[in-house]
Length: 309
Image 1: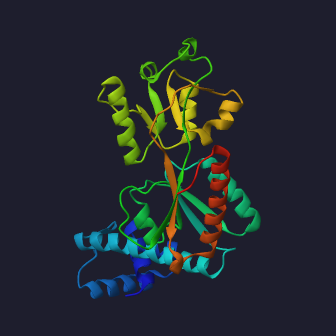
Image 2: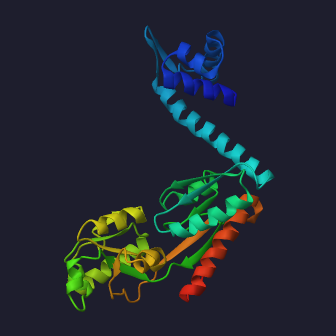
């Protein structure tokens, strides 16, 4: 059984027709038919039911299809990984981001990085911290920016953790709260609170804080987004109150787009991290982008008076 046979099998399953599949992958129909027959002989089962209008997967075929897609995807990831391992300036670097990493810091790092390596392709994908460890180990992503949920099971992953700074609570310029001289969180909670999807440990902290403050058994964040831009937009067009790290909101508060409220969340700290495979499988491109990200985070920490862990 060859990898090419699996690709051909997937093409037939997706097209539901040998003629269409052979045309798409560029081989003759008889050759494709022989390839699938060889695969069926290998598994000793029928992978397709042959119908007058085409073919459909059998129960065995559906099981093989799931495995085949994973195998072909893994082979692509390994090829991409080897290409990157051989040279930092070419290939495709895949960065996974959680909702809690500073978007502006990633943009700054990439802008500087691409000036040095304009031939390197970079793909940024949004995912949650729940999937990050497996995606790193499977080489689906090269770096994960954000908090990985739970305890790491593998010792092959390196994590650099940074405090993201104070949490700014803000509203639009004409919000009714601005007519109150000293609004507190109890007053703020009369309006829907909008924020990023928090890591579980932070969610527990802030939900407990709201309960202790108001006696309400409800989430601290009423509306959660995985995009900082969506949070700002909703606050801009409604009476919602938003919450984001100060490092994200500083430019928008300074130019008067929003108004920061004199409210803090005592004792609650916010962190983010950069995760990647350890040195024994270290990609040159990964090393360089991690160094750039770390440098920018540390410079920002010095401005805010914070220390990375």
